[in-house]
Length: 279
Image 1: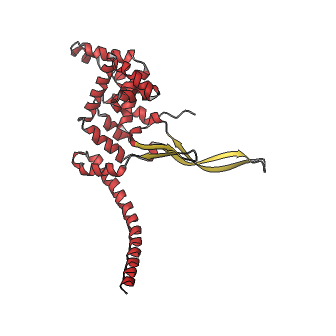
Image 2 (image 1 turned 180 degrees about the vertical axis):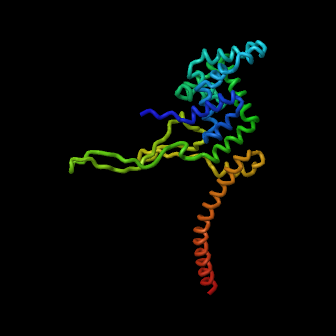
């Protein structure tokens, strides 16, 4: 059964079009509670800018001096196929030609390494990448913000961003009664790799029993780094950081009280042994 379209995708597009493009993508992501990398992906796949160009009044177009570069940008989105556009989007995300090719075409590293240069040498593709890189840098203000944003993404990543789990009810024929019996079971469904930010995952491996284990990157290190650079964070992020630290401190205090109890017993045993040795 195909996965339903995320309703936030259409809301994000409407916010961008309503603002005539004069809104930061990270602000849209914050408003809708999704990753900013996901917003950039939707923006590219759904061609927000192409649609936006059709909504501007004709007066504005006349007041702009004639230039060749805007035409070449429009042309780039028309002559490229979807995989070539995805290559551009993934390159902006990973800054790596081979990985971008692998993600866009779903091929092996060797294949991507052999053919990625062909796309990279395409002047139309390079023009589109330059355009998307500029939009990306403009949306965050500073290139150093790349690092800050990644720490923010890691610190506030939630396991439900990558999987869905819960309880389902299953109906099956009851051979004894001839009716229908209901069974309840737990389930875990991983989201498709194209719908998540894989850079936030530290490890994915298959277990001995055939299951799958997923481990996120170290939240504690990310929170510690953000705590040391709190002066460069915006107000909303500071509040989230404060709440996250409060949760962690509470969990630490619970664990600490348990370990303190064990520690007191350990100290008592050591004291008994020492007194025995002295005797």
